[in-house]
Image 1 (cartoon, protein in one colour):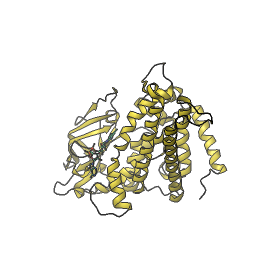
Image 2 (cartoon, rainbow, N blue to C red):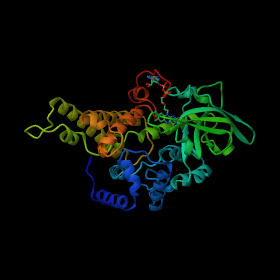
Image 3 (tube, protein in one colour):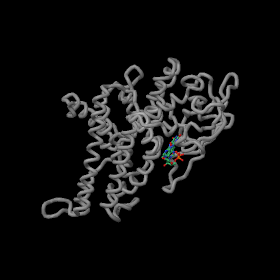
Image 4 (cartoon, rainbow, N blue to C red):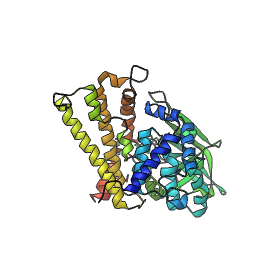
Length: 394
Ligand SMILES: Cc1cc2nc3c(=O)[nH]c(=O)nc-3n(C[C@H](O)[C@H](O)[C@H](O)COP(=O)(O)OP(=O)(O)OC[C@H]3O[C@@H](n4cnc5c(N)ncnc54)[C@H](O)[C@@H]3O)c2cc1C
């Protein structure tokens, strides 16, 4: 297997670099490079620019308005975008609900929803978790009943990322109270209606990336159930695999200087030009081996997949490996920078220094969202290693 880029792939990389140089708004790149969060409007602005270029849906096949890029092209696009300070594409439409509408939606649903995701017209959010249903997601209680010409939804969701900006919510709801997994359906709910209320949850850093979301006699159209009535668990699980495949990529490792370069800068070098602290040197070497092994495994999996876009339980391996290596890098970075790494904002701190503590804090969430690391380990044990089933979470 050849892991080097071909001449055509190198030419593609040049094209991506030129596009980013010319089209990426400087204010957005600057905020991202400074470790600051960007606004919903900035995400929409960037999505519109990508759409106009014909790159609105990098991971989608051409028949649904995507680029039809190979896995290697996608990898190049993602790496170059991260290096340039481009925002991630908003995952909820493009990487989560879009692919399941392609797989489980009927042609009418595909024609209605998919173009609006590519163009960025609709912002989606994910209504899965509830106060009593996180890892054990199938315990969810939000009820959806047949009210004749529409569905009527009552209940509440939590940790709904970006719900305050969303136009639509893809939601797992209970349509049969006598069964667990087989009593769940997957329904698309408009957020702009009287029966929907979002309450942003304020974090210690002052921002509110997610909300509590309340449905009180909220309505959904009869046509807006994806997959069969009570068949939503299969749809919902496939969506989670797509979600996790986006969480195991190179972006989890962060951009900027690598930890060995940082250590040489902050800790100094010995007379042979090596990082001065031998213990730190050993730990950095281990981390670099982990990171390289993770990236090579992604490239190998992409080469073996040969364009097959349906994710599998392997995404759980990638998610755990990518998020662990990302957290390892964040820990080492803070340690190397010492008190300079605690700078939150202001001119006394460089960009890397301001990013360090923010990256360390936000990185904590990566082993929780999309299903915790323990739940991924359970899925690997059950679905890949074939060990006895001890959980209902996968
Ligand atoms: C930043 C962020 C964004 C999020 N965005 C969304 C969103 O947009 N939409 C949405 O629906 N949800 C979202 N979530 C919620 C996320 O999916 C849940 O937090 C996650 O699934 C864990 O559920 P929980 O918080 O209820 O923890 P719990 O399920 O209560 O788990 C607590 C601990 O117990 C462990 N545990 C639980 N069961 C088992 C088991 N069977 N075996 C071993 N260990 C176990 C877990 O690993 C965890 O360490 C988000 C979470 C975060 C942090």
